[in-house]
Amino acid sequence: MTRLAARHSALNLAQGFPNFAAPQEIKDAACHAIQQDINQYAVTWGAPRFRRALAEKYRRFYDWDIDPDRHITVACGATECMIAAILAVVDPGQKVLIIEPFYENYGPDTILAGSTPVYLSLDPQRGWSLDFEEMESVLRREAAEGEGVRALILNTPHNPTGKVFSRHELERIAQLACEYDFYVLTDEIYEHIVYDGHEHLPIALMDGMAQRTITISGMSKSYSVTGWRVGTIIAPQDLSGAIRKVHDFLTVGAAAPLQEAGVAAMNLPDSYYQQLATDYRERRDYLLPALRQAGFRFEVPEGAYYVMTDISGLSDLEDVAFVRRMITEFQLAAVPGSSFFHDKSQGRRYVRFAFCKTLDLLEEASRRIAKIGASG
Image (cartoon, rainbow, N blue to C red; front, side, top):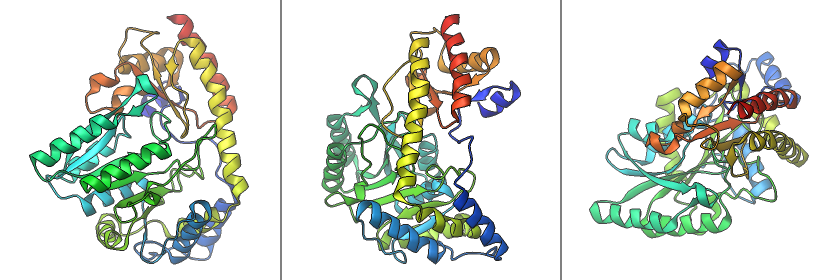
């Protein structure tokens, strides 16, 4: 969709990257690191200063005691973090639970690892809630048929729906993980982008989860540097050892000067993160009324910077054809909803918009959305 948008000079609300600058402090730190000749390999599993700064940030935000030498691995973006984690803890043929709609890498990651994805659906009619009766039924079935489920991939705040899993939901997942003995690989890349009193809670801090959780995050979303590819993994020592071996053979290590810039990012004040969430809420609240007035239906995102919209009231077209029409006729790009489902038919009436853009771009996008609504 990004390539098609470029071909038609369309506004790109498809791919989730900001069109505004990263904080000056971290850009200056990256430039300084390069000028200081920090241009060779860092320690394979992460520059020590960056790992220490990251551990301190987790202590500051979550009162989480992390050993930077035993528990943290730095990789090339959260995308590498996830595949490294899966390859480290899941053997070929083992089962991995994936909650859908899902970030589109999760399914291919499990397949590349030789494991078998098993899908659980969020219910769009109930605020994208997870059906725990269905989840437990799947876990019982897999346990009865073989060795059971090896891992669950959890993404909160959630792409593409904007759902933030509540404490109650996380505690229930934790109970099931302990009862059925599976790992939770949790993608928390949007941890600082939450709205309306919702709170991001690391599931690793729930009872019984310290030894069975791999926590993935990174710099991309919180600091508007999606192209830097600096991701982070927190895991217990035995799992960190396995993850580091896989990571070493995948990429050797993340960019050394950008990890030094990460130290500056970790040391940004609390006010930075408060303003980050405030600014994204303003962008969300600017775009959603235009979508609603045009006839798109959606649940208001609780976090992240996407909105998953239902187009069935607007058009009889399926998602891919609808988005192609938006791009070619109205110069506005989004992501077809079927991208986020293993059974593409489940996503045919959905389209995802990203609102990580400046207000002037969202203003123009809103005008084009109005024309889409008027066109029927």
